[in-house]
Image (cartoon, rainbow, N blue to C red; front, side, top):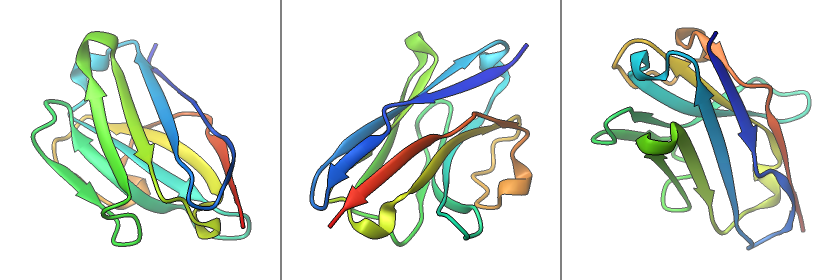
Length: 124
């Protein structure tokens, strides 16, 4: 049984930081790519960042480049999203997603497994 579980969301003031975690259980070694997506109220789900499981290749949305960093700890089967210089526009539910292939797709329909999401709210 494969499962992804996000944690670390919360309320933060603009300019602050949060670190999201995604714990991967089950056949985690089969996953080649882990990504973060987010969905604001009334908006489409959008790509944030992706990382191959070896950590040698990353991809970021233009809106978060230079502010967010995706990383992983294979020993803990976990992936992280460090978010700095947060803006009110970053407010959304953040989802962890995984796919068996190695390409760092930015489209949500390329990811087979999803977590339940964690809310991030950035106040101005």
